[in-house]
Image 1 (cartoon, rainbow, N blue to C red):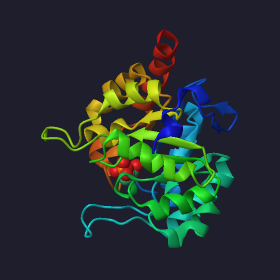
Image 2: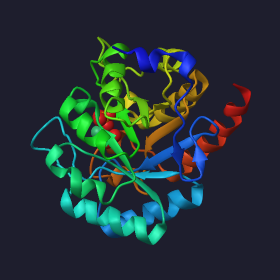
Image 3: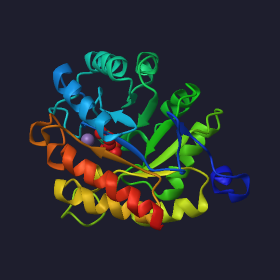
Image 4: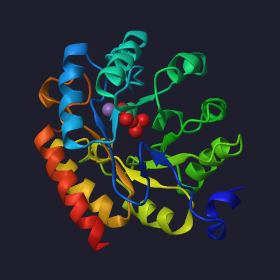
Length: 264
Ligand code: PEP
Ligand code: MN
């Protein structure tokens, strides 16, 4: 089943993000867990742009574990992303949860995120794939690497090879941290898959102070890019504030990533 992605002889998939090509230089996706009000988003976008972040990420539709938690600004959040994209000329990524929202989301975002909870939603994978836009595919938190590659194959089989795999931690017996960031998968996929691999140390740890060390460890393991929840006021973030870092820390991670990249 995973013939295509496992076939080293057919060459690595090249994906362009703006004027960069993934794997040739580090790529950074950053922004809040959820899209917030327009003033906060403007502050965040301004800082991210100044740091040289490639893609502004933020969830308009939020797949929360509890139905009583904030579910995102939904359509209003998409409109905020549209405004930010226009004002700051930034590449935008947001998560899609439901095939019924595909048209609306496509109209605004450049890179579609399929979240951990939807990695097995094959109809959604195919429909998102048909958009022809790059897709960042989070690993299901209980998915094996093989199942994750199978999900990627669903997208590739509709004719869209632009799939970025994103390791975001898996559920293990360990409960000290929110998830266990499986960096084995990163080293493995860099060797045996044709697809680029990113690391999300935010969901991978769930702990703000662990984001920097695990981001850099991910880069050492071979990650092509990082996805990091970042906010101008992390403590005030409307979701996942406990794992959200500030702009200063993001700047440090970016600088160190560039240093490590050259040493790998
Ligand atoms: C996110 O990136 O905001 C998110 C919900 O991630 P995951 O699907 O990995 O939990
Ligand atoms: Mn989050």
